[in-house]
Structures are given as C-alpha cells and as structure tokens.
Image (cartoon, rainbow, N blue to C red; front, side, top):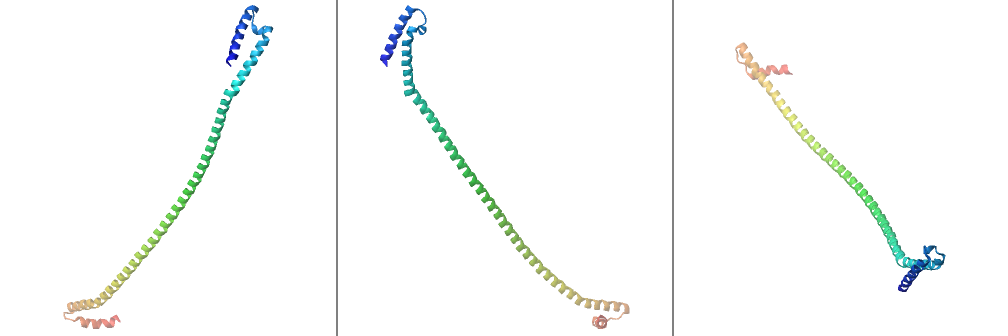
Length: 184
C-alpha cells in the first residue's frame, strides 16, 4: 500500500512536469487518458476494498443489530400484550367473583336479618298475647269481684235510702232477700 502511494506521488510529480510542457488541463489531454484510467481503476479497487472490507461490514452489523433490536422489542411488546391480556382476564374474573361473593353475602345478611326479625316479632307477639291474656283474666276477675260487690253495695245503699225515707232501720240482708226475686 505504501508502494502504491509512492507510485502515486511519483506519477503526480511526473504529471505536473508534463502539464507544464503541454499547457492545458491534463484530464482533457488525450495522451494522458491511459494513466488517468489506470489511476481510476487503482482508486476504484482501493475504494472498493476499503468499503467491502471495513465500512460495509460495520454498516451491515449496525443494520443487523437494529433488525435484531426491533425484533426483540416486537417480541417483548407481544409478550407484554399477552401478559396484559391475561392480567385483564384475571382482573375481570376476580371482579366478577368479588361481585358474586358480595351478592351472596348481602343475601345471607338479608336472610339472617329477616329470620332474626321474624323470631323477634314472634317473641314480641307471644309476650303481647300472654300479657293480653293476663290482662283479660285480671279484668274478668276484677269484673266478677265488682259484680259481687255491686249486690252488697246496692243492698247497703237501698237500706240506707229506705232508712232515711221511712225512718226505720232495714238490714242489708233483708234488702238482698227482696232484691233476689227481682234479679231473677
């Protein structure tokens, strides 16, 4: 390669010396076409070798790395999407299960409260029924006692009235005897 560069430098010096003799642009001088084509071929081959051995493999590696990275990113995105879908399905199932549990718990509480309320109502009705029966029995006893006392009170009152009206004392027993045929 160094030899090629030295040859290139020698050729450039020779070309410069020739150019001073001919006077004009060397690329347009038909006598200089052969060396120019040779240098074009040499430059093309060197450029081709540098590009094919150094630059293009690096560019290829970069493109391959980008392609691999894009593929990995797409696979990761697909994996995340499937994970997200699975998590969403699990969330919806958990939410549905929670709603069902809440509904069943509410039903159980409602049924238990209804049962407790019915038991309490039955107990209160039983207490009220027994208290009502006791009250009716007391009322009946009081009524019977009052009715039994009415005859005595009526007899005493009648004896007092007769005693005042007639001025004679009449006993309550005598008034009761007189009142019995009237009560029957």
